[in-house]
Image (cartoon, rainbow, N blue to C red):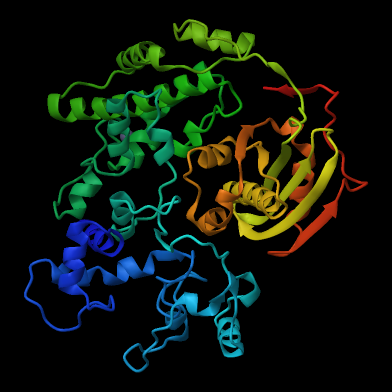
Amino acid sequence: MCLLMKLRWFIINSNSQGANFLKAKFASLKGEWIKYHKKSSIWPGIKWVKNHIDENSFHVIGNGNDVSLWHDAWCSNSSIAHMLNVDNSRFALTSKVSDIIKDGRWVLPTELCSILNRVGVNPNLLPTISENKDQRIWKLTSNGEFSVPSCMDLVRDHSPKINWCKWVWMSCIHPRLSSQVWKLLSGSCSTDDRLKKHGFSFASMCSLCRCNEETIDHILWNCSFSDEFWSWLHSMFNLSKGRFFMDIITKTQSKSQAVNQIWFVAVMSTMVEIWKARNRAIFDEVTPSLPKIKITVLNTIRSSAIRIKGNMFNSVEELCILSTLGIGSRPIMTQKIIKCRWIPPPLDFVKINCDGAARGNPGPAGAGIIVRDFKSATIVSISQGLGISSNFMAEVSAIILGIEWAAHNNKTKIIVCSDSSSAIMSFKKNSIPWSVKGRWNSIRNSFQEIRYAHVFREVNFAADALAKQGTHLSMGQTLFHNGRPSNLATENPDSTYFRIA
Ligand SMILES: [Zn+2]
């Protein structure tokens, strides 16, 4: 199915010979898909995935020539016809988005304004128009490019997320150990209770304590045999005793990374060794022996020492834990103090410090920018409300807001600074999220030079304050201030700021 979706996407979007051949075969001259029967081995498949492709496509408006006003999603997540529940067979809705664009501006008939209001689209917040071609983007990837894995994720069955997953697969745990723990925790081991569920009838007995019925929870957490083992392990790490996996694995959260990683190995190898002891008792009739398991677990911990990459705290307690386990000491985390400064831009440049903030991720978000010249004088400061957004999108929107201001004010040489390295990287690599692609496309050619710089937040506090102010504004609401607002502290180029890392 995913590959059929890829084929349909290819036919719609590519201008290659192959795509044009298939378009000529399955679409009319107007570009509409055929509605009559055609003998073909691929056409039924291409038709089958239509809804998936339509529902997850979005159009970034350029000149609007290639986008249907009614049937394509361009101003909202769905098409207007879909939101109005309009039956296409009854109306010939052939208008293009370019029909409501005149001289690069939106010109909306009153009826259309009321229709947009009816479907919850604000006619004053329509996408930015540019001279470029319209672009169809795939909503399921952040950069808008079609990918088969995103289709796989769309069509696969989504089971509820399990909370223990992230604790099992870690670089400090050998993959073989992780896979064994995965089997134990996912309940795929053939304990007596599972065999009974499959219709086998017999008297169940735990082969470790010979007292209770056998279930995986009993063997790992409740059995008196394993209980003794867990007590020993917890005492080695000076911890109070936990009762089940999530309780036990999170016990060391107040300790250093190194001790945490050793604890993870210890807990998982214990679980596996208890299970192996149970198997030996049943299949080889070997009486379970605590001392033997202890030695095996200690050996596993020692052999995993090479995978423990974390730092330890500078404390006697941690040193004792490591030496008891026979593991050498690890490097101690030291605090580094980094000097940073706000440097004014060169003579013909302006420097735009940008920051995005969100109260929650996602949450009410805001963007803040401050533009300063070579004399460090503030030209403008802007706060904008972004509605509900993620932290990353707030950072990206802030950069776009800054670049837009520069484009509209004829600043052709700019330095864009942000404390989000991922947002800066996405601009440097030109893989910006599709939701701002339209705005970016309309201004990207207005500049002689754009330099991007990642700065520490210690020298980006003015933009940070403006962004925080933006989180309290409603979506699209913008506060401009020419020059520096009296209540806004800005970075002093003569001062040195310190970052503790
Ligand atoms: Zn038992």
